Image 1 (tube, helix red, strand yellow):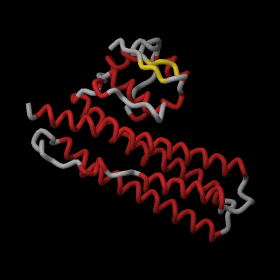
Image 2 (tube, one colour):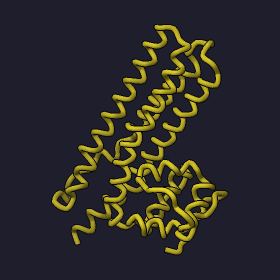
Image 3 (cartoon, rainbow, N blue to C red):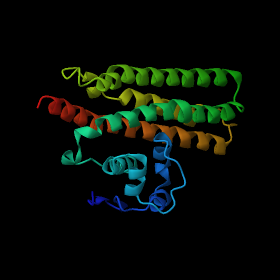
Image 4 (cartoon, helix red, strand yellow):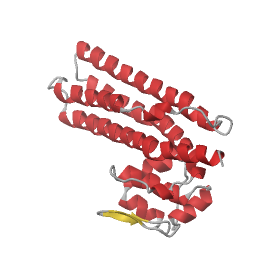
Length: 235
């Protein structure tokens, strides 16, 4: 547990690191605390002390932080333990709720402020486009819940179950998110105030990047952990 993970120019994250230092150095990690429903205040406790308080795996918590901070971070294969599987599934489920309950409505609120400066044709087109995007994401999340997470819940009874969906690329999600950004940049009338346009773009790109990390978690954590867990059941 004393292993320190170095991420180039980023501060090394370790179990002994104080929570205040983590949040103050990387405020973009606050969404992790929201997803895990970790209560504030922290006082002067460390990552390890927090995880002991919350009944969480400190090494997995650090992996999640690293993957959100550094797109090129890859967890070491020997650091993945099959016991982590259900905690990873719980985090991915929490992320689905975070997207549908917070991030997507938040972008929608910014969209409505932008549309106040648009003509009726632009309003209908952009609302329809965004509503289709939300429905697309909701369907994708529901499919994951049904075909992956629910199967993992009963993996001990379905050791030979297929997880082929984990191999499927998520590029269509990225493309659709970029399409929304492209509309805001290229197609909205000039009278839309630049601060409003930039604020919406900022949140769209935040959503896009977070969805990319979500895909990375599925590929780099969930997939190998499923393989390790299935292997452990055959021993």
